[in-house]
Image 1 (cartoon, rainbow, N blue to C red):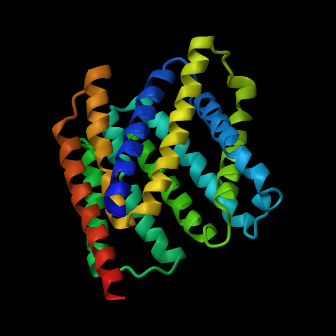
Image 2 (cartoon, one colour; image 1 turned 90 degrees about the vertical axis):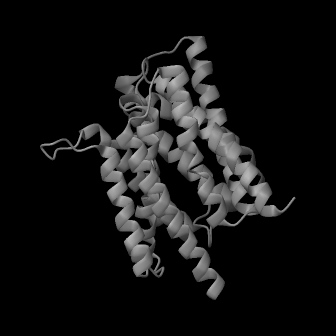
Length: 287
């Protein structure tokens, strides 16, 4: 089995697990605050990273770029909070479709802050992709967009910001350093408001939210493993299976049926994103 195929298989499992956590968050947020769910999730991630940090201590806590870490943490906090909030107020398929805007934000931010080349083909694809986002957001006849539809788009911008920072930090920082800083400080940001917002869960609900955190941690690890084995341009395409999983979860567990505008917007976004991945592969082949 080729490494690319192994990477695709790992990525498919990772995407399925991430979609599962989205459905679980949609259930949990009916009883608990978004920040409480995020806080418990980050505790699980922090605990999973702690053994590796201890093994590599003190190097695992050293960083040469605290400023970039701060920007990354802010982006991750926005992305994770918006991700949970979005599934609470939108159908799963719609929320997932709008998070695909991350691809276009990432391309733009990488061009401005990492100096990556953005030719006319990618600019055109980004423009078409954002058109797909607008379609999925379904503006009414008066031109106004449902404000809830902005939540996953803002989350996508946060995720793209964190992604650009990771590209920078991965050149000098250990993986454990990246994980421990994000899990601790995102958990801290989520935890401070819980002084006023905390609602003590019963044992079943607590175990449910811990399970959400465990599944998210496993999904994240599998996603990293997939990128280590396969080419990013190939692995990235698997992410669009989230829409299939989200539609299935939405239909079977929440009686949600994706409407025509969501599916049309998703088709435009996926097509333009695939073209961006194709152009990246072509550019790498020329170098």
